[in-house]
Image (cartoon, rainbow, N blue to C red):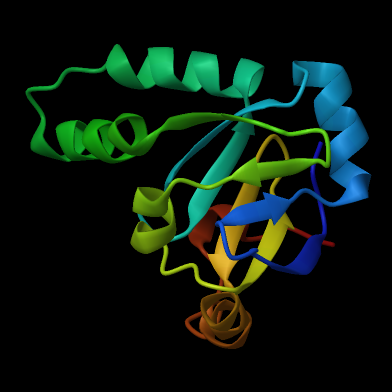
Length: 145
């Protein structure tokens, strides 16, 4: 399970160093094999391979006759790339994905349970400011921290 966030830098080749707090678990659970894909919010999603496989299967099992479903299939599966951590715990982010999420240098890696989200730093900081200004969604009524 991934939680917490880390401000990181991409190197000049587009590599991301996975923080040590996640690295050992990823090596143990999936031997460093990950899937990186696009998210509709213009960030990247990073899944351990075994977490991604059932998501892709379920997504591709949906009817492609629904235009919204087809668009989501195109986005998530069409952008999905298999990557593998190198000996230094880094992954190479394909340029198509870096461009999609506007990732250049400063990024934020945020744990989200079974996946990680990778954000351009300014976008991430903007989320913290305005995300709940309109109140909580109905399904969170009565939710207590």
